[in-house]
Image: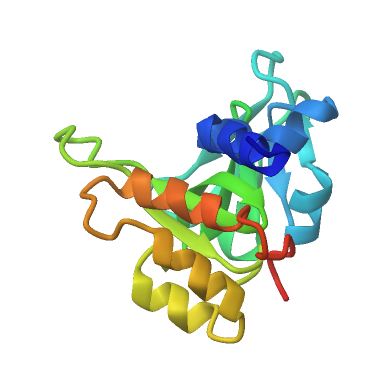
Amino acid sequence: MSMKTIVFAVLAALPFSVLGQQNAQRVSFPDNGIYRSASDFAAHTLTDGFDTGQPGYRLKNEVFEPVVKVDEPNQQEVKLSMATLWGERKLGVDYRIVDGQLYRVEHADRVIIYSLPANTITGAGWNTYYFSRELNSPIYLITAKHLSEVYYDQPAKLTAFDGIDWQNDHPSVRARQLVEAFYKPGVTSQAAE
């Protein structure tokens, strides 16, 4: 068994959240805060950052208004429009904000994978998975059509996507296979080329 095969097998076995948050674990930074831009997310630079359980601090999304409220001790509550933010970090999990919707960042190396939870009211269904070519690129549902449209100019990646099992009913399997496709030999490591 070659070293590349072993590395690929290990990567495939890691859960999305570990891969998506691997850089976050190298450098200690707050559990909660705001990402004003994609470059802030890439550098793990949080605005108004604080740790969970820190007295007087709170980060809250409004239900009927597209704003994020930040509470700090001895400060006036701050309301930030979601339209001006790239994302947020809540309880140690990163989210990208697009059109007022919070997409959980599952993986952010070579390809960016996001998820939305299954129907939390009924408990039915599975999470839905999305991707973007770059941190600021539009978000697309993971489908063969969307992948071919977004990566039309990268034949090696399009060939690697042939290994995705589009017949599998579990969206998480397709998301995992998409991540694996970016680690195949011959597929470059840059998410945006």
